[in-house]
Image (cartoon, rainbow, N blue to C red):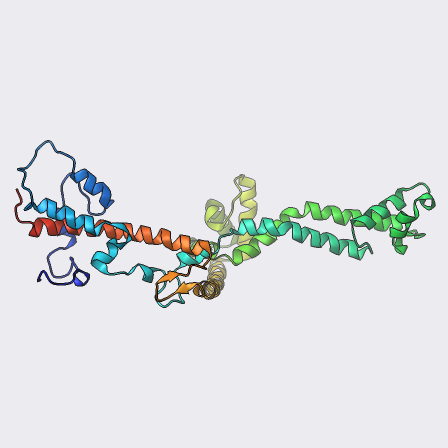
Length: 357
């Protein structure tokens, strides 16, 4: 190697003897770790030691190594010093296909947040649907009907109230019965809030990449557990397996009776025997894989419009979550490369620095 060789073309691990074992040995002193933070390395190396070597200015291999390590460890360019600017390619290789980390960061709202935000709207819509079936358009009319049907003398009510009452409730022998049915249905919308929330949550989770990729992993674990059952295992054995591994099968209950009840429900859904259960889980996996693929494509299309492939960065107009995500990932990546570069700099300093005293 000539000293004129571009550092961008130099790979300290290729045909130079600088393999992992050599680097580990060459940098093995009580103050350095080539994979630790480079700045803490420099600070530690500059501390006095109990056993000091002969001071040698200028020709010290340690000093040369520190200089190279410092150059290699400065800022986000540390990785580029030895490996070129590869950081942008960790986000996308073609400007259209982005890493899951970026796509997940783009979806800032959790499924729980989405479900809670939609719940009032759904309940309002449900309430309106019930009222419409009973010929009532709004809360004001509902109050007027209540006053009309509970009044001792409805004819004595104000004209304003009587005008709000639909004809279906005037001089109708079934009016009271219909009103009680209406009240019962309206009450069920309050009782059914948990059911409505769970439905909204399931819908939101279907469209969330982070949840779906984790769900796919969990389905794989379930399949492995089921495949470990005896060949002739039936529903009861499947239920027992699920009850012993509640978290793996998505059971969040902690009371034993509730775990057993949910385990039974899941086992019955999976099928009557091991073969059927494994096939059911396999089909579930295929369905989620398809959904994950569709989600990636949709999110990729949405993210790609914000990417400047020439600059290998998101445009200034991009949503903040994308810009913040790439900054975080770049610093994490640069930190890794900086440590490697710093360690390699120390090795080069000892190799070419001259005086080793």
